[in-house]
Image (tube, rainbow, N blue to C red; front, side):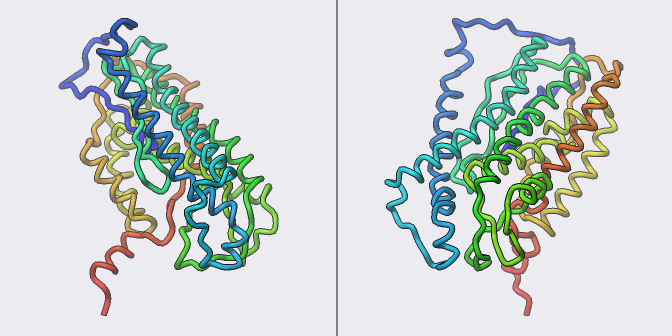
Length: 336
């Protein structure tokens, strides 16, 4: 999702002098295999478009579904110009958010002369149509300031791009009578969406549900990606930021938050358990930078506080409601 978007830093035995690689256009397509990046990008756009058809159909027929929960649009949705347009809009808005996140990292690397790949997108037939994107950093990071700037650039970009999508999408979302919970997928709400919903969505009482416009759903995914990446774990963006501020002490923070991940997986959403496993496989220890002594400065500490605020506004403890680890345990070992 980098969401998720996990940036691979070289794992070395100890700090090494920074090495940069010159950009050679002649080898760009062959040696760097940019055709792979382009192919994955196109496949991800297609994957987002196909998945977006279902969310667009739910939005268009929200009133009918509210009156008759058994209503089915049928295969005609793939010939409906309005649904296809909404699906395309969803795909384009979300791909811009994800691309902005990864380009934030990539362009910051280029600014510092650090070798990094272009983004690799991951198409997948999930509820959102992708497993996120990542870049690979191929040369050591010179110092903590560079590490902080690289880590923070992605979440700042995805948050800034998600915000207008949420504002526009929330204003266009629909309010319908509450749908049967057993036949509906219920998504958790980040604090920012709760605030915007209160300002822009009217008549959303306790007996009603909100059907998000596809643009708002793309913004919702953007916030999920932003929050996930800001956890101070391993080589997530938050792990880079945490190491830049705390140094080796960041590993203790990572262990604490790994426990938080597991707890959230048990009580809020089982998907956190999968992410905890992925992070464990990648490792909690962050590779050292070449210069471990230089402070990051007051300006970056202030930006770090801003990032914490962004995390609070974006975080969704239960992205999909009703799928906790306890629920899975009860299904496997039913209580007598």
